[in-house]
Image: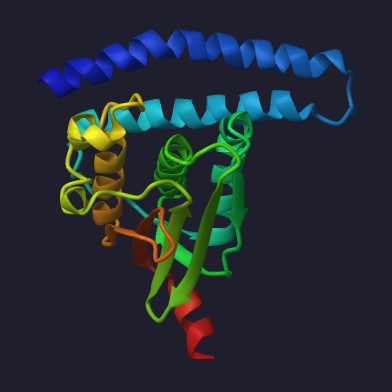
Length: 231
């Protein structure tokens, strides 16, 4: 009941401001005149408004069906989803002068595109929080037989060993003293785990050989990717 009430509150309180921002961004796009190339900042605003609108719609759907309810998955290209997610957090990374290096190999993933993008945005945002200024975040993805592997690594201080087993638990981040200087609800990684497992995948955390945290997850590959691997 509390979750349903929270979902209703969020969709009501955020729906109107999002609609306003969408209208303003559309008006800004018209200022340059018809046929003009879209300003990258306006494009970023429109893209993020669209993502938030989709997330609110998903929240409503989850409230109606239950968070574990089934979904119809499509096939999407890992490179395209990663590119969109990197674009969504680019300004956040620029503020800290953090360099994001994305070099995924082509693969087709059986997934809901918006939910996979939501996972990667959450993981990238989390990595940016804990990466020092002028640090580096790497995101890779490749086909591994019948699954597509993803990894996001940062150049931060890493994760304490005792936290590795519980880092994906809801609200766990808020209780970790190693993160006390970084504001967080502790829900981001828990949401990622829920989405990945709902897709039939798995996710885990570890520390890199040269330091920093590494988040790895795998999702089922589409049939076309499996054929490509076999060939």
